[in-house]
Length: 50
Image (tube, one colour):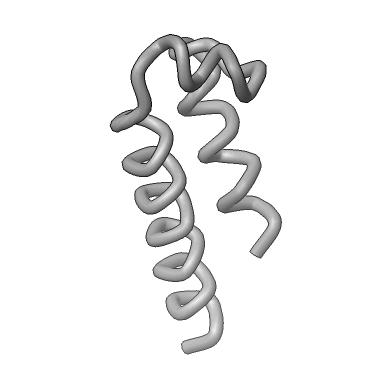
C-alpha cells in the first residue's frame, strides 16, 4: 500500500512541476536558468525527491 501511495505522490509531483514550468514563456524560463528542453528532467528530479 505504501508503494502505491509513494508512486501516486511522485506522479503528482512530476505533473505539478511539469505543468507549472510549462506555462512559463521562454524569457521567464531563461530568467530561472532553465531551457524548455530541461522541463521533463527537472520534473523527474522533483518527483524522485519524494
